[in-house]
Length: 593
Image (cartoon, rainbow, N blue to C red):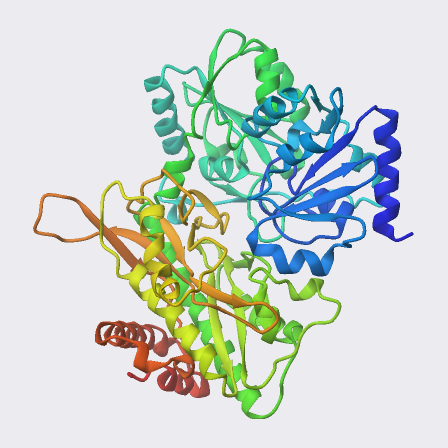
């Protein structure tokens, strides 16, 4: 049997012992973060799938994996179709599907620490409607069977100075505490590690790409905080850094602190906090008040110091990206067609030379030729990395974590002379990018209202892409930050000044090529003569688009003017930071159309 088949067999043995007809294994850990430490990659251990989202369901005689549209190609390459049915996470809701697979009376196991309370309640309702039972089991079955599970990495956190944050922890806690008083609450569960990290002006160092302190907290209406965290993650000077009122407690003491909230009103976000914390608060007698995490919006709306930090981080990041693109062109011209590993390593080394650099903001997507059709392709998980192919494209999506900001950029690069069809599609994608960049919109507009701007030119020709157009980005925090988003799916959060979002339309043709044009932008107020407040975007990313991929006849005069203005700004801002061949390459790459 294969290792995956052996693992499924071990899980089924334990399921029989506990009288479970099914086991639900999400791609999540106890903190519900996007990036997981190696010891919490449970879904990968069960299935072999390396994507960043999905759910595995193990039944007595079969198994299924559910993924969204980003991974329809990748999942079939990585997961054994003889062991798993491959289903669509959006069009075939997994709990509903599971209910139809089971008989009345069946017991379904889940670890409540790995799911939100909203999911737990909805799943319970769906299963109970079929006379089935969802069982919350914190004695995780995967952990019991994973005998070679890596040890958890624990490292002290970083203390972030106010010259990077723009406000002290005491100021932030006071602001959020006042919102609790106004809501008539005694406390709030601050569950998301990035919310805790922002609130206390700390950053973690033990999860690749995600600089958050693995922890959760209770914030009281007084501004005091109970921080539940491994004490080994707390650095020297922490108490003086955060100010008075922050008590550090091991997570094992959470239940005793919950008991002190009996009869109290506690705000908790059922959509982002895990089910276990909220179920235990209820058992302790607390009155849960379902509200959005009160830290989300203040964290998303960067202050002036954070916005300026983002500008500076993007300038440094652009230097590395331009140097990489100049090197890449020279290597291709010399006939050296490198593999994806070599390319990603070169870009990573150039970024690492920057000041204030702490590592990548996500795993670099270094995708040559047909591999770029997988929009979240990971060259490190391929059997062998792809190699540049002449007369095709290379897609590189990458970013960095800096003390003063988080970056994320995608550029699609011509390798040789790509086909006219590729240039036509690249131009349609770039036209959508330009349209979104130039948007002006009244206060109260959400990203959903703007999404069609980026898709319109693809739609006119019968094309589309299966991912969102834009995601929020943190300030030396998660590269995928809510609550704002630009996508077709409804998002009620209005875009507001200080929010950083990506602008990244694309197009992907299975087995042939992939295209994406991504900049980060920050929402800003616009000058108008009317009475309605109007917002727009300031672009942060300053790296040229590949003019060799343009079908210029498809561009309007206004679009040509936009591209020339953008490239002039790139040249004027980044050029003085470069020397020699790198500067000469930038001069050539930013020549006006």
